[in-house]
Length: 191
Image 1 (cartoon, helix red, strand yellow):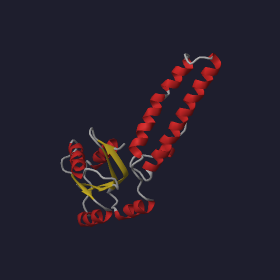
Image 2: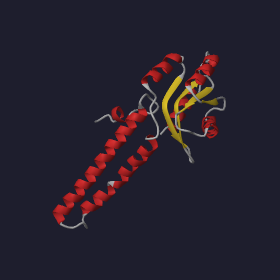
Image 3: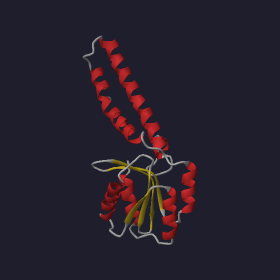
Image 4: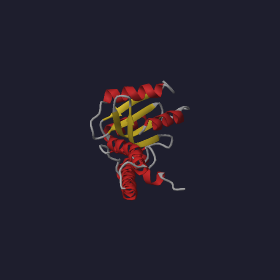
């Protein structure tokens, strides 16, 4: 069986957004080509559009539409650069968790952070280039995580420098017992 994760990327890992863009674009093109081939084959065989081949072509639109939605979500975002990801990995402690290319949605908005770090009782994120409502993002993440543990606080930073300054002051904290559950919940939120 083909391992599609190799091509589509794994949530919250390096280069996830870029892989998602490529994967969904290729699959969308394949669906369109398949639909057109089936439609024209049916037209050539039956000499009319009213046939089962037309129905199959039309039904191909459903999974294709899902790919269009995925592209609309991912296209405005960019993956974290390799140098930046390596710098962050070197900076963080062994018990800290780094979630890269963090795009997530609430009922009302589509939100994105370049990365999220879970360290001790802190969930820290750095805003991506595109504008976002920082207060709403902080509130939404806090409410989501509080369902698992209310001991975590959420901080959102404008850039890497502000994050690193805060992180270096707050280092040395041990991972919480429920850190794994919190990280899993954050990954579930990710698109």
